[in-house]
Length: 591
Image (cartoon, rainbow, N blue to C red; front, side):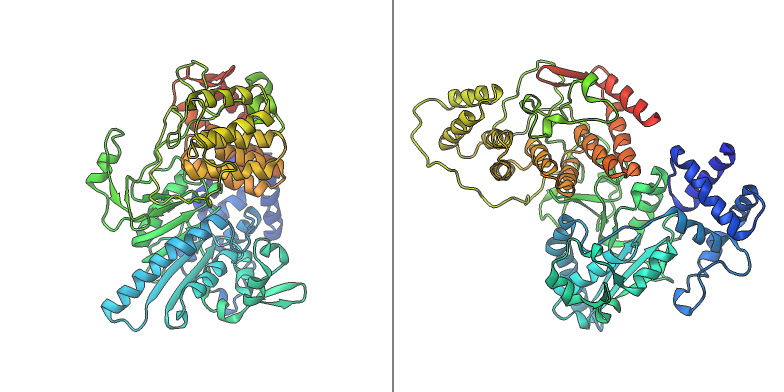
């Protein structure tokens, strides 16, 4: 392999597409380049590089996106770089999507974001006297179209008179074959894995072994080729401007940081003031988001282009000691637009034993009794004590960033206590100390009884519900464990430990998607939760998604480099120094 030449290809691809190709993927990249070399009957990779590098890609791209005109989208008779870029990108990108992907984000779209946008545009229509109200949505990186069609379906359900609206739903992708499939609107059963049968039959018709999107939905969506890095937008000529909503999910995970920043700047200008941006979980970590206001919900973070540009407020926000407040149209409360750390950092297992090929996290697995008695935290005081946590208060931690308050947190339905309120016969403190001792000595049935007595004295103490949940989990009763975890979160939604326990239970039950979803919530609510990044990286690695796994571990390195190297990341009797963990993570990525 000509490593120098391949490195030049990597730089060229990143420059034109934003795609990040890892050194360990350079050999597969060379094989893909040779496939195109053979198709073009060129004599060398150097000649192929010159074809790509010297093409006036951007200028031709704006003139050659006529996929509906009957033009053959294969290699054109005349050899030009613009067409070849499209052919190469079919080999470099693969699209995998499904309808209503990420139920948490679609919950926010259905119940929060779209109702607000619909009401706003209806008001604009009434005030300005236009012929019809208009709503503009862009699915950027739409893959094979499931996301764009999901948005169209959702809009028809939310707008009773949708036939009298101008609904502009655009889907763009860099992969030509994905766009072709999106336009066909034919999907296999795997694309419906989170869709109930009633919804599927309402919007699709069976076609052999597949399902065809119905025409009245299909006509609401327009699909076009698009390159987020090289295209100029906002672009009024192409009707990519003044968007109410941009959805760009599971795209940035493949991008270099500089390319992400570039696209975010263009997204900000393409949104109308007050418009919203959805990305996948953790994709924007480490990015400067001064031009957006972040609205944090347990399901996801939503980014909004402010109605008024943040000028003086931005200067204040850069001062960590200051308070910069913005009125949130979504939350309806004052929001500082930053991330406030209200939970703690991770616990870690013994360094020598827990870090082999990847990070293991026995503390979250219900079968590990010893580790499960520990607490998830970085304790800079090195006192090794289990912190006192009362309802409404999260444990102290090293704070690297902050999480904005949620005006109306998403809460599970209230779970009634199994015991009635009783007159206390001993002090609350003594009962709580007894509960902790029983739990720490693995006497889980007795701990459960003790916890229920504690609940009779104080039914609103989140720590008691959490210990009760852990006791049930250690006994293998996951139904009861989940029930009391939900109650702990209901009482104190910004405490990190119940989320970790829920993720561990989900993984133990084999529900990997749920485990990932919960860990992503942890990352959004507590952005400096190193353990969440490490756990989700391990899951991605097991699934073979090495790109996402690497991204998560890079985030860990970023967090560790921001803290003093002599900081101890500890659980009661096991500690790891930040310097040692950082060294290990760098070695892991290098390998």
